[in-house]
Amino acid sequence: MQKKLTGQAVLDLVKTVKFDTAGLVPAIAQDRKSGEILMLAYMNSESLRLTLKTGIVHYYSRSRKKLWKKGESSGNVQKLHKIAIDCDGDALLLTIEQIGDAACHTGYRSCFFRTPGSQGLIARGKKVFNPDKVYGIGRKKIE
Amino acid sequence: MQKKLTGQAVLDLVKTVKFDTAGLVPAIAQDRKSGEILMLAYMNSESLRLTLKTGIVHYYSRSRKKLWKKGESSGNVQKLHKIAIDCDGDALLLTIEQIGDAACHTGYRSCFFRTPGSQGLIARGKKVFNPDKVYGIGRKKIE
Image (cartoon, rainbow over all chains, first blue to last red; front, side, top):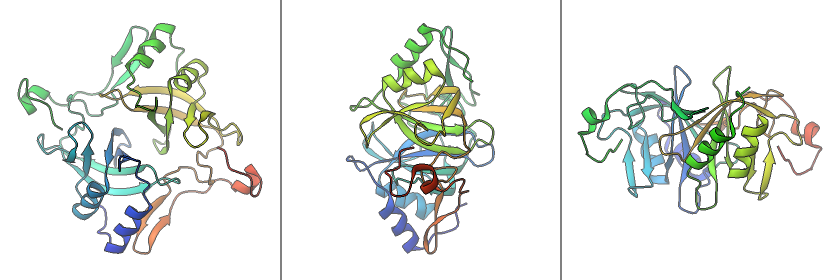
């Protein structure tokens, strides 16, 4: 887990982030062991503070327009191990441990499971769970 | 290098991408060998098509408001090996070979070289080149 940051360190980081006009910053989640990229989502300052305070990754859901604790319905939470900010201050990189082995609400391990082939996009990733079993058939899927 | 895609495959991919209201999509560049995340930048449909056509990564510079061939002044171009699109179609993952070993205009290998510590943000990454030598002292740095 990310070593507990002092209040000052949290303040410094939040102050350095250049949130966009909607108050958001993209955050990449990378598996700490395999290095695999699991997803890209957005944080606002509240979700960033909460992530740093709890060590559990929180995003901001642009579709639901609310704070989103990743894994709140599936149980597939993300434990923060390291956070880095880029040279411009407008992107974050989260090194995480993915509980439940899957980050994507489709059941794939990574959200980046589609690559182009001659017959269109092909799903190549590893499917870890059946979303109907996790979220219930026909239920709106919330990660 | 990314296997040459058919015109149809390029069309399918570009059609699937959900560009934002500014016509952009975030693209993560990951080193194909180490798995290290080197940068996050943005593409418009023109830069995406050009990347797929040439195998050399092109972004769209939001600050300069123009097409940006990564490495156009430093020579540190990125060769595309694989491209993947996420479940929502609103983010891309580029697996690349970074020529010159550094992606960041500051001279660091990765743009994500800063992490929070008790004394504020700390530069922890590997510095590969001196930007003054590559871009000229005081010159506006263009990657």
